[in-house]
Length: 123
Length: 107
Image (cartoon, rainbow over all chains, first blue to last red; front, side):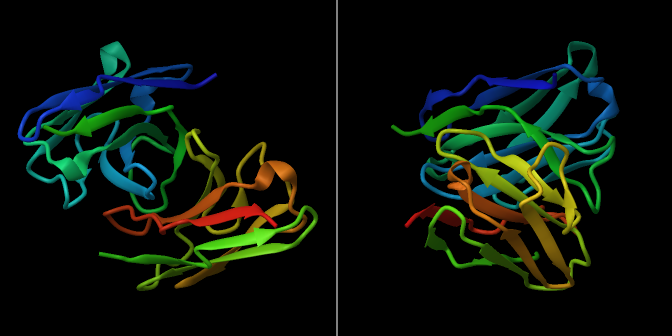
């Protein structure tokens, strides 16, 4: 069974940093691209970032470009999101999601998703 | 960037009703459109990919159609477990945008 378990969320002050992790199991991690998707409290879904199987292709939403960095460690079956210069509007539940293939590209989808880790940015 | 809209934003329906949700893209996305279901407190779940392909394990009462800019998700006979929020998502180009969601609740 595919499992994605996020961790690393918490309360952080504006301007500070946080690193999220996603531990993957139940599939060959380095065969798949991965993504982070977030959901602000009571709001809809927003794609944050995606990374191909070998980290050769990476993309970000404009709202986080230059502040967030996605990475992965295939030896540890783990996905990461380094979040710097956090803002109140980054407050959200952050989901890790598996791509349909090794290189996220036109025609992709997210399946499955983890349960999420909550990030709260507040002073 | 491609913008996604959904209508209605919410609807009330009864068990057994036929429900249709519409998703529209701001430009043509061919058939690169996916649908997800999210129940309160839970992660989203993939229902339909590539506009009309049913994800494994998803009941056949769910169906998707459309191409270009206009898409629909249909639930042929609403069941109690279908009360949830439904999101469309385009995978034609980055950013991989979602629609704002349609909440389906009990009439």
